[in-house]
Image (cartoon, rainbow, N blue to C red):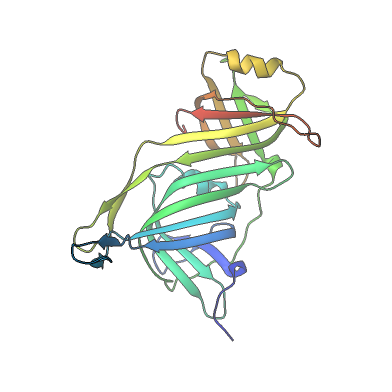
Length: 271
């Protein structure tokens, strides 16, 4: 029988040691590990084609979509400063195959939930190095998807305290840590990865009953406070809580659609 893996067999795990006991990190919907050698094309006079192709700095990257089972995984690493010692992509077959990435940091993260659905995330992580799957002790896939009703979006628009939004249709927020690789001049690998200026943006889509709030948001001058909590594992986890400002408010709609308010926002930071 062929050992070519199917995407349905992909599992995402992390561990503190290369061959230790792993933690299962959620149900994979899409996964794309990549290793870019950053080839350098060298041209020289006297010939039309390339003179040489030499290796640049190797860049291991993984992008993946998850149905989230533990929101603390996202909140713990979304700042781009905390690193994961080892991240394993395991294709669960009769013989385990896959990849092990070392010293992993989140570069970008987008978390989203629509009414009636589960919390999902799209994440791009960078790693210092990658190798064939290490012989770790892999945990069994476990945990429950987090439903939309276990998420709470709060606003404090007048400084009198947070008020929960209860008429939303969907929310999304994105974190971009703008990682930069530091090269290892000895062997062309990555020595370290450093987060630069961070941006935190998002979108809240709500029901439209009237236009009072629509106009009020555009006219508001002061910054307001935003907070998102997810009631997943244990006590509620604060995903972000900081000041921010609404952006361009829109109310698109077609003949088959109800009219919703689209509220993009930008925060000063996660916390």
